[in-house]
Amino acid sequence: MFDSVGDVARKQQTLFMWILWAAVLVFIVVEGVLIYVVMKFRRRPQDRIPRQVHGNRNLEIAWTIAPIIVLAVVAVPTISTLIDLAAPAPEDALHIRVIGHQWWWEFVYPDQDLIIANEVHIPVGRPISMTLESADVIHSFWIPKIVGKVDMIPNRINKLPTFIVPEEAPGIYFGQCAELCGTAHALMKFRVTAQSDGDFQNWIENQKTPSEVPITDPERIGHDLFNGQGLCLTCHTVRGTTAQGKIGPDLTHFGSRSTLGAALLPNTSEHLTQWLEDPEDLKPGNIMARDAAIYIDPNLRLDSEEIESLVSYLKSLK
Ligand code: CUA
Image (cartoon, rainbow, N blue to C red; front, side, top):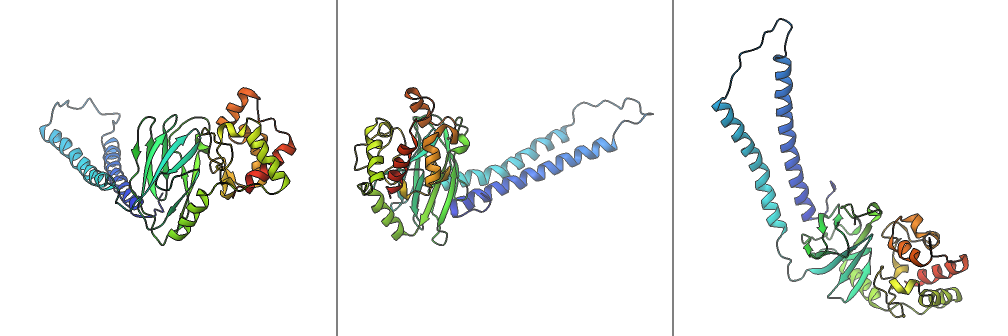
């Protein structure tokens, strides 16, 4: 967060540094005077009780005015930054709804009619306007380099300051939930891919197309398992198939993601196998393990052949 990218993060960092140095100054003055007084006026063996005084108008005026000045130094830039960052989004902004779940992220592109999970893509050089919601408990949305945290509160829509990733700073940015929201709070991460407008439009087109029909045998078996066993399709959607569950992340183009388990691990066949063997082990408390456990405690009880087919199928969903 000290390596800020873009206007919003820079303004937030400037404000943070301003308040930090004001606090450091107060700390040094207060502690300095305290240490000086303790040393200079400490009691020595021959000392008697000193003269007792009560009330000092000048001192009281001084220690009323000094904090007013300090608070003004902090309040003026704080309020002006708050007003600045609350400005409404411009007309050409890209709107994204973010919904926090225990413990993953749902991203909805209303104008593009697209829902994805955990890996959000945005174009550089264009204002991004995000609204924040929660499906369960309080979460907090945070992209440390790009924009400071804002709470996601159930039954309420919060707004993130409208930000732009500069054209010269495309790349992958890390995001993290910043509000203790349960067992796997620390593992509630996401990724932001900031890319050129052309790449972004291509990505949108690819994500909007329904999933491809499985080609190889293992893929076909995995597809049938996914859609037939009354397990995966209960919670997950893969557009273009019968799987239309809305409880867990949309997996239509799961194979095109670089991570799994909400940016927990690289999306490799090995990690996906581990995940299907025992999701509880990789991400304690996660709803996939928990809800499946209602029926088949404690993991999904898939045999290694079934897992292998599911992995081939899921990896084929580019
Ligand atoms: Cu969601 Cu912490």
